[in-house]
Image 1 (cartoon, one colour):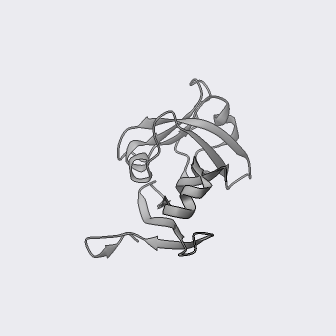
Image 2 (cartoon, helix red, strand yellow):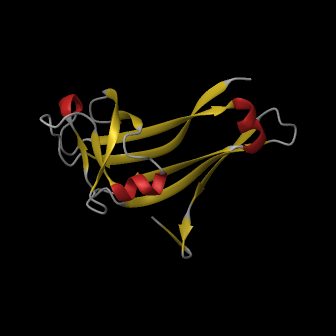
Length: 149
């Protein structure tokens, strides 16, 4: 059936804290955010700047855990300003037949104004019994009986 590219992680509405044109490439992101959605250091990500509509791809460097840092570096710094809102996506290649058999899970964080977790979601593709399609579920994760909102 072939391979398909599916989103496995998304950081939604994170704010640029700094833009460092003098650094050698990449985007630095708070390690806690990376850990929560499963993005690895050096993993390629696609980025959309909600303030100006610009899109770019780069790779990830981990920042200090809990600091809320989101810092485009190098050429990417020219596409952002501190305070801009970004959506950051990471993808993985999957075998289409395997997704139809076992599904797929993606993790999504919606950030607050300090780049801390406001909401955490699982977006899931669930195989149907006939094995010919999947259904979609968007579930907020609740910790210790409380929503993260």
